[in-house]
Image (cartoon, rainbow, N blue to C red; front, side, top):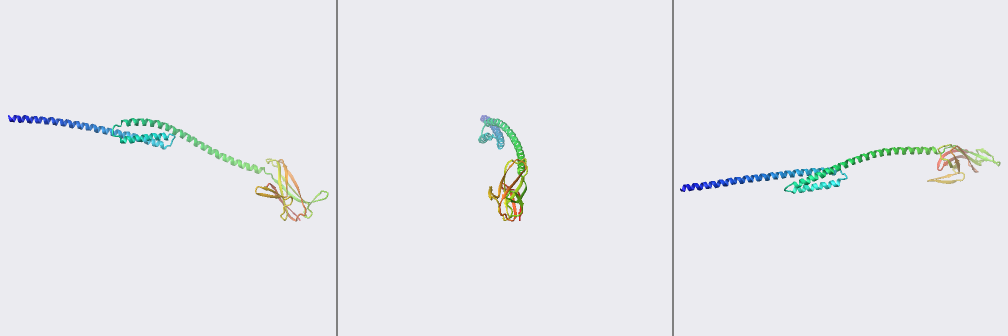
Length: 291
């Protein structure tokens, strides 16, 4: 009897233990399943976070490259890049769901596509303008060189014309004369007999010279280096010219013969020098001797 009771108690204990074992196994299985689910969710979350972060970094790199090109859109591009940097910081600090970051990423990607399209259009427009400007610079450079050549040629031509327009003085001659009471002039080479020095010269024909009145200054210097005649002075810039007399001729582009008398007395023996000036420029000279 007592033995039967012990067997019944043992069976009851075994049954309870069996139930507890089954419960434990069920609980352990559930816990393992829940842990696996959590692990899977965490792994998925981390993977999505890394993916979003990678896409954000790609966007930032794209903006950095576009900003470096320094277009007229640089300010707007910088603002969008700063939004991405702020979102990356927020994503780094997040611990849970990244779905809102995906939404914001999608919006930023769409915005970037729009801005990049606009920026690319500006780049092409700038490249076209730059090419046109460079072409214009080349054309202007060539025009400048051509103009410089023309200016040089014109200056040379002007110098040639100016040089060609200058009048030429030819056949400058001087002789001494004795003046008779009758008015007749007799040529002499003796200083003691001379009353007049006759100076003559020819202005050559020049069709490109300017016509009109021409004034020449005649300087006669005796053997003692004295300037004879009026001894007037004329200033040309820094040059002061002392001359014996001035003669004004009406020039009409044809050959003109000029003759002037310089009266005097007590002429010195020796060499005389005659210089003819157009303003301060010596245009002709000659010499003669009285004995």
